[in-house]
Each structure stands twice: as C-alpha cells, then as structure tokens.
Image 1 (cartoon, one colour):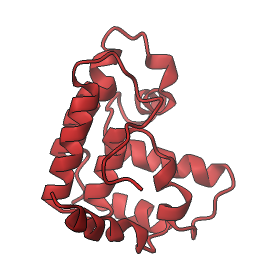
Image 2 (cartoon, helix red, strand yellow; image 1 turned 90 degrees about the vertical axis):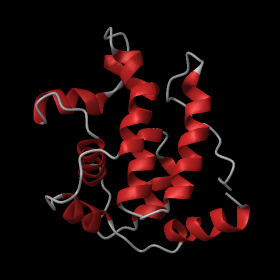
Image 3 (tube, one colour; image 1 turned 45 degrees about the vertical axis):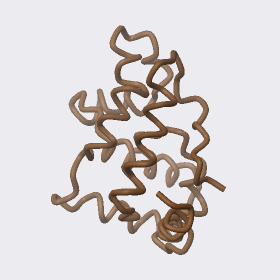
Image 4 (cartoon, helix red, strand yellow; image 1 turned 135 degrees about the horizontal axis):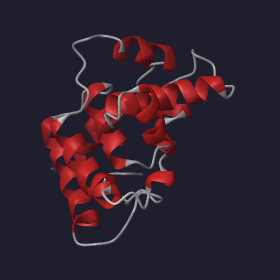
Length: 155
C-alpha cells in the first residue's frame, strides 16, 4: 500500500466525530460481528495463544469481565463495549469523541484492528497491511501487548 493511500485511509480516523455513545449504540446492533477475520487472527497470536496455560490471565481484566459477563467468550465486540463502559464509569462523557479520547491510547492490536474495520470502515488493503505488520511483530517472538508495535503508517 502506498503512503498516500494509507494517509487517505487514516483520515477516516482523524476526521471522524463518532462519540463513545455512538459506538455503544452501534455495538448493540445485532448485525455487528463479534470478531472480524483479522481481529480473531491477531487475538490468537497477540494474547490468545500466550494465555492458553493461564499465566497471563490476571493481566487482562477485560477477559475476567468476559468470563463473568460474556459467558467466557473473548470477543473484540465485548472488549470494545467493556472498554467504553469502563471509560464512562471513570469520568468520560458519552459525547466525547472516540478518536481523540480513546483510540490512540489502545495498545491491544486485535481491538485496534476490530475498531478500524467496524467503527472506521478502513479498506481491506489497509487492514491487510496492518495485519501483516502485526503478524511479523508477534509471529516469532515472546512479546505481549503491553506495548503497541510501531505501525509504518502511524504518525
């Protein structure tokens, strides 16, 4: 993907006025998938495989919430809903813009790519490039998601 194309795609995030309330409303729509192909693949390499033996479980509070509130289903739809509800319970306003208050702070790549696809409607080419970089970052390593990998198109 060319830099110009990537920059055009990134305006979908930068110029978006979607609020926390808008996203919660969108997630209640039954047509919104629990996971996308990319978010599920990234989850499996980023944290799912690393958590098979339970060693990292205490680090992922959203997964504890999924155990209690979502029948042990670790979906990115639930993850995003849980993330926003947590922000609202901790002083954020429902009318705050998601892209300026939240998106840049999210380190979890599975959640980021889910948001890119579901909330921002990024192109398949952009998502594919992002997925490739994430796979290379986590693929042959023992990394966890405490630090977001640098994406070539991130500013």
